[in-house]
Length: 201
Length: 336
Ligand code: SF4
Ligand code: SF4
Image 1: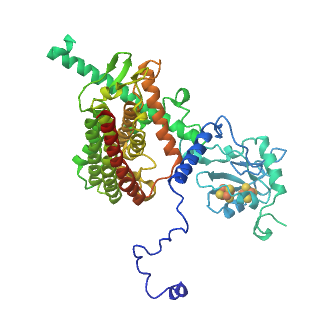
Image 2: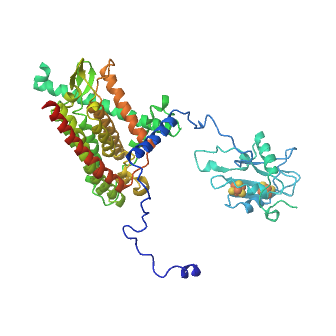
Image 3: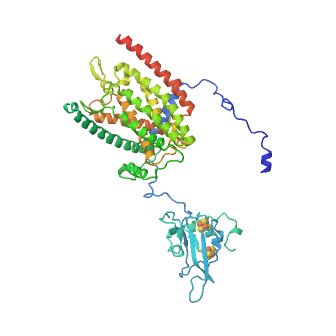
């Protein structure tokens, strides 16, 4: 900062005079009234021809544009094929989240109440979708690929409370396009260096 | 006619006529806004409003309800009375012009509220009232952007009013009357042809000046400097919201229809168009002019302030004066 200041001129530039800095009139003959009118007519012709061309608007919500196959939208918590939850309550996703919108409260698994294959599971798992920026760091951080982002983006709702996605909501069966998105994302791995990702080597 | 001569019957007729005209002009304004939004949209390859009602025709009702339910906001430390009076003047002046505009209904039937012999002068007087609305609104808003917008507008309207008035003088000289009905019904006897002609054939330069000055008079793009968004936020409109904003908005669109109707009346033979029924012919002409204004708005960028003043004072005004002089000479030469 200090260096920058000293490199500034001693006196601020004085205010410009009335004709200072005004570009000189272009050399040669002025185009003339006829050329000016022709230019205006050219503009009018362009807009009129656009008027008769078909509109290009996508009529959302009836029509939708194509999403990128790696589009990051609403989250899902995955299960193993045997029905156990993948999440082991390690809170790495909450730590990785740049806006801190994930809340994980872990509890111990026991033989009577086995929720996930590991020692612990997530008793509470909440994501505040109003704060989430859909960066996907949680997905990158998770050691067991439990939290994933699906491609749904139409998440509007009627109250702030409804945007706190609870574990029940996140555990809903995944639509098939989530799998497709995961495969597409795997083909283009995250640009983060390996050391910063939660995935163990 | 006997009804007209009876004092009470006269008032009944006039009141009904005013109510009818108010209704027609208001409806027309609403659909002008719709038309503008659709046409501008098409120029930019968008569909424009298309959700509320068929083809979005009820969009204006939806917008009106929304605006009516908005908080009636008045900025702190303003002159509340002036703040409210300004949009009232704007809308009242805009409506008043329609009192003297005749509308051709059928071949020998016309509709007007007041058939005064200085019709055009009155319209100019009413349209000048708009300056007060904008200057008072800008002053009362207690906001420097509003004030600047108001001042600019005053300068712009005063400069263009001269050109606008002078552009029509040749028409009056040829017709010999300021009554709009006389101008429309001006007939010529050219060889085998006997009948009304579009006066643009006689006053083409006047028409060109009128066209440009009218855009400036109605504060529309490319001459919409009073509300230049990039420099002045919303100009004199900055502090207005809700119904008071609606009134300014309404006034702008009524004025747009008024100048379109005037152009049709003064230069294109009003309700005369071959065999087409007068009311339809009049309608077609107004719509074409409205489209022209929208088309200009969709095409040209806003002029810089000094360019606007230069065009008004150095080009349009001398041209209009020359036009008056030349027309006078030609008239004297041909008619003695
Ligand atoms: S996508 Fe990003 S912001 Fe959203 S929960 Fe995951 S880490 Fe947090
Ligand atoms: S990082 Fe994965 S396993 Fe750990 S708490 Fe988050 S979702 Fe569960």
